[in-house]
Length: 172
Image (cartoon, helix red, strand yellow):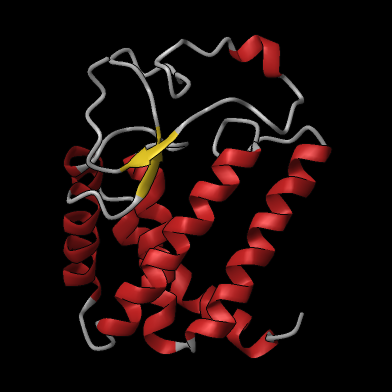
């Protein structure tokens, strides 16, 4: 609401960016986790990087925060985001990854989108982004590697997940 022109620009840029985000090669370079994984981190970092190439980072940051507040409203209405119920730690993860995207976009204003994608993937694989810890089977675990029983946390905002850097290997 505070930045309607920026919101219109974002909407236009989103469709071009989404085509690049949705390429099968992206999943191969990262993982298949739309929530909490490297693919989720990529979505946030990449889109924020793209948007901050053309729009002031301060405005884009506010839009990102507004989006995450929208996730909380979705949670309150028992709606899913990318197939899972939003939670507090996913929200923190997204905000951290948004910040990384803002930095990458600001530092690479003229980089074409295909090259920006590769830059973001490199940064994620180098551990610069944040993801949610999982075991080798892809199940969420807490910081002590204890399996989280998702059934116990239905309609709960606070879930005892654990944030880790994106170079974490799911081998526990």
